[in-house]
Amino acid sequence: MTFRATVLTLYPEMFPGPLGVSLAGRAMEDGKWALDAVQIRDFAIDRHRTVDDTPAGGGAGMVLRVDVLAAAIDHARAANPGVPVLAMTPRGKPVSQARVRELAAGPGVILLCGRFEGFDERIFAGRQVEEISVGDIILSGGEPAALMVLDACVRLLPGVMGAHASGEEESFEGGLLEYPHYTRPAEWEGREIPEVLRSGNHARIAQWRREQRAADTRQRRPDLWGKARAGTD
Image 1: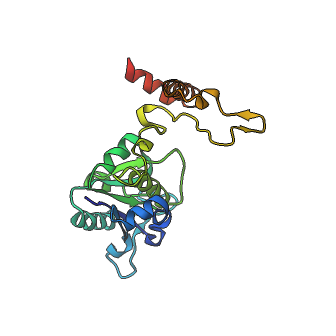
Image 2: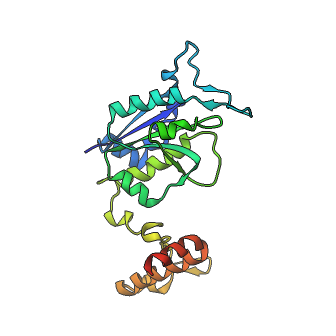
Image 3: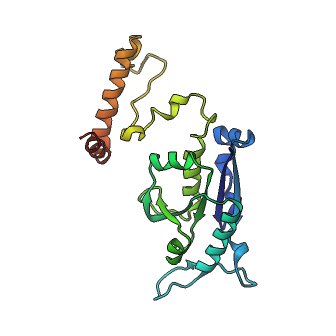
């Protein structure tokens, strides 16, 4: 099964962008996933191809029109039925590795990229659109966020990563950060690779890595640590 992604955007030329190289690019060439960037402006209803209008109640900026967005979503759903529609917005729920795994296990996804002041609120209920955020930051548009989400999905598709375990021992898997990594040289500017990693004792190494995951998560991301601890109670 080929994972199919459709991106609804005012800037289709931004895709595939970095997804056309490295692991994602090779996977696309091999037919493991496909990408269609659709111009939202093609669904405008006037000769000027207008996609936005002034906000109701006044205020700065412009808002993407609900009728144009709905037509674009309907077009994408007809071409790829049964897949979730996600809108990139800082008002959305933070996307998690667990949600990415759910998406990657499915047939594909439709990503809606905002611009200006965002979307007419009625599109979310009117077309059952899921709002997601990639962090507490404001971007110029949803396209960089869509690239991030797609990259996270594509690398989990079967046969994309070289080692299956690569996707199981990373940050956020199991609710914890990943353990630290080292490689040659064994000593650099007076700093040495931890002795346990040079011991050849795989049981000790595994234990050290578990301890490091817990310690680093507790120190760097107490929010994740609290959730992980709550899940074990």
